[in-house]
Length: 281
Image 1 (tube, helix red, strand yellow):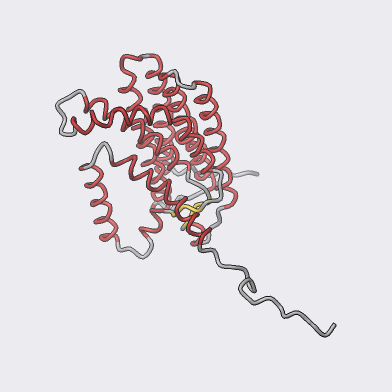
Image 2 (tube, helix red, strand yellow):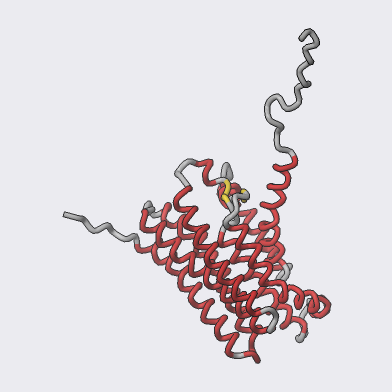
């Protein structure tokens, strides 16, 4: 006789909040495609909802551990929700941006499809390969899907905010107007950015698990102070902070990979002198 396992309510609701934000992000991206007059308004909201989904994704595991309610079902549900929020939703944004500019729309479609497939592969590989050892949670193999989605979302929010700031009495209005040509270039590059992010997700390049690294050996007060400082810096430099922060994380893995390639130890015996020739034969 099989027994029905109890579903933890609070962690499940937090995880489903992730899925809800992903679905809403897709809805707002489709609104942007259907309403060109308010395109940047809707696409900004779409990106913002993906960023909110990242908050739910960061909280659900910690809520489950605090409630002593971790389970295999929670892990599987988390991955399913991640496919929506960090696979499909950012891919729809990429496709919508490419179609709106009428710039290589086929490439935008292909890049979006590849992004979804690589995000799904990345999440499946994470579930299969990650074990319970502490060291396994210090680094990711490949770019985490929330970071890849977050970079696209941050670009969408940044593009929307700069458009608004450039046409209003905003403290960054002058900077925003100067950045408009650069943002147009970013718009044109979004399909190529999505292709690179997709390949990074399925790569074996190591990425630091930021939260675990920060929390390891930290007192709660120290961690809280650091979190507050980062939040203040993000608010003060809004709307430029998010693409810089997430983009810095994306490049950090590449920098670490290049560093390891350059300073990789030579194999044993590689620096030994060649054996002397035997002249007696």
